[in-house]
Structures are given as C-alpha cells and as structure tokens.
Amino acid sequence: MHPATIVATFGTIFVAELPDKTMLATIVLSARFKRSLAVWIGAALALTAQMVIAVVAGRLLDLLPDRPVKAAVAVLFATGTVVLWRSSHEPVDGADVAEDAALVARRLPAWRVSSAVLGVVFLAEWGDLTQLATASLASNGEALSVFVGATAAMVTVAAIGVVAGQSLLRVLPERLLRKIAAVIFGILALLATVAAIRG
Image (tube, one colour):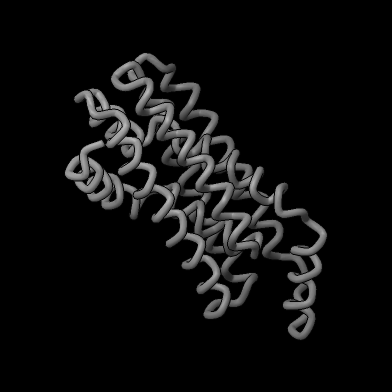
C-alpha cells in the first residue's frame, strides 16, 4: 500500500462526499431511526460495498445502465418523501415524544435499522460522483490504497452524518425535522428523476 495515495484519495473523496446526497440521507435516517450505531453500521456497510464495486470495476462502471439506476434512486427518494411527510402529521404529545421514540427504537431490531439504511444508501450511491472518482483513481494501478482511502473517507462522512442527525433532534422539534427531511428527500427525488430523464 502507498500512504501518499491513501491520504490523497481520502482527501479527494471526503471533500466530494460532504455536500453529497448520501450525507444528507444519512443525516435524515439518523434523525428518523434514532439509532446512531445501527444507522452508521448500515451506511458504512453500504458505502464499503460501493467502494469495493468502484475499485473492482474501475472504468467499467461507465457500462452500467445509468438511466434505470437513477430512476430507481428517484423512486426510492420519492417514497421516502411521502413516508416522512405523512409521519410529520402524526399527533405528537409533548411529554410522550421521548418515550414514544424510545419505544419505537426498542421494538425495531438494530439489524432491521441497519438493513434499511444499507439499502437506501447503497442505491443512493450508485453512479455517484464519489463512486466514479474512486473508480477513476483505482484505474491508476493502486487499487488497494485507493480502496482504503476512499472507504475511510466515506465511513467518516457517514459518521458525521449520524452525529449531525442526532444533534438536529436536540435543536428542532421532531415534526419539523420530519417535514424538512421530506422536503430534502423530495428535492433528491426530483434531481434523480431529472438525471434519469437526461440519461
């Protein structure tokens, strides 16, 4: 492995991923499920799998059917928009909010939270700038170093997203946060739809 390649890859992918839809999705999912570790594990597994695919496939990623992948991402985000918006109108009893959230968290096994997050993040990352950048960097012959640097960057960004999602719950009322999340998912769905139409 080449430390310089690892550091350069980490810097490149970290900066590209910070304002990305995957980061936003991780923030939203963390706030929604209130299970930081389970959300981070799901996101980290999805992002690691995507980096494996990017490194192994290299420049061959250009051969994947771009339009159906973007359409699937659009449908996923549109579904998330509807679910989040509808849940923001559920009755909220001030004193019972924390208790209700804790009940939901206890009822939903951590593996199910991680699985749901893994699915959302894995699909959202297909054809993403960071996936393509990783594939391009890996084509230079230092695949293992690129994989280590890219994966470390992606997992770090996921951790930041999880922390940000939990912090938002301390500042914003949950119903407002769900509405904001629904709007963000709606914008992401619209952008993915436009990208799918343009091909």
